[in-house]
Length: 142
Image (cartoon, rainbow, N blue to C red; front, side, top):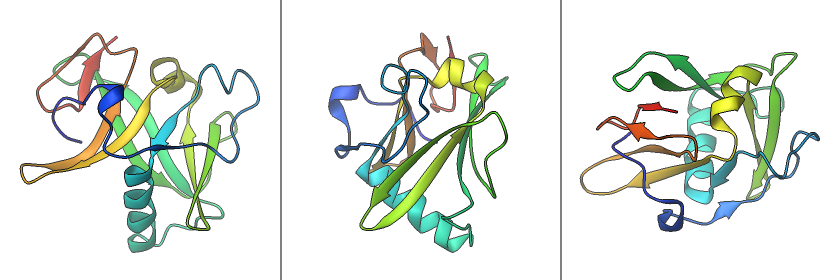
């Protein structure tokens, strides 16, 4: 995770539409991922030997951090029973994103981007629920 996220209009690459998304309010309350973020997720999944058929990227929120809530990003071997699951496709390869119901309250409508500059590189959470974030970009208030 990196410094404060750019505005939605200043993404590093275009957003990739999901191939599949949760049925209930999927369009109104979605998770979006940019092309660069998907490329990085796919590369990391291969490096970590995470199966694209069963596993995926888990996005979550925990209490803590300098602004009150912290972003979590990790790989998981499979979705949990109540997870919302999005599936994205890029260059013939699929990536699934898992979000638990509690975290989804804070992540609905967000865009996951990946920024790579000479000064820094990392995932940016462009979150419409964030009212304040810390300098490192890994925690926020809602």
